[in-house]
Image (cartoon, rainbow, N blue to C red; front, side):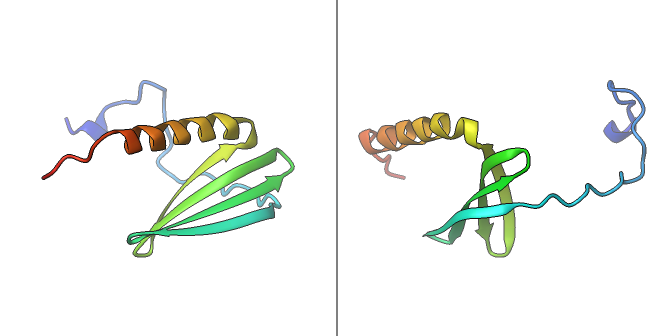
Length: 96
């Protein structure tokens, strides 16, 4: 049996795409772009009826990946990024 032929532990899953999600109006509050080596990061603070969020989009040669962080998690996210930056600065780079 091929792995994708196994039944789902979550019950029957249809083999057809679900209906598209309805459009939700999003207002852009602030946008910043950072170029690091070959990667471009776009940070966009947005707001919609459900609340505010930060969308971080990474673009590498036309391929895009995005993460979304709700505004309620921005302080935790900032703390972790600052901790990682401090650890990187304090740890010597290994020579290849």
